[in-house]
Amino acid sequence: MPTFEDAVADAAEAQQAMRGLAHAMQGMSDPSQGYPVLGSLTWGLASLEFALSQLARFYETTASEQGEVRGDRDAGRASAQRVAEHLRASSELVARAVESVTYAHNADSEIAYTPPTVARAPRRTARATRTNHVAPATTSAPVRTVEVNGPWL
Image (cartoon, rainbow, N blue to C red):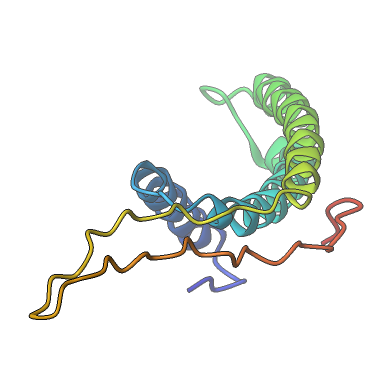
């Protein structure tokens, strides 16, 4: 459960959640589960983008003011700036991923998945003079009409 106050604990929990998702995806067999997963990933990536921007801001200010490299404050500021630049670049790349996953989420909203049909053998009874025919299921998943215009935090 996120603390919303302890960045280190929340980052560790996010890492474990993403690891768990990666493993759970290997066993996913129902295509209709993709839509909610894409939605959650969209919001998760949007949060990651925001967290990277906040972390960059932290390195530009607090870390830059307090950082030292082997006792050298100027070197500490320069290193903190480099960290901030890499974090800003990462945030921009994640923003592109958010956009791409949002498009995938929207595209999946148009798909109706039909459950696979299961071939059944006819039942054999004492009066087995006729064959029972099993009609395939005609129900399909409801069409999703949720539109995602973009991630908002």
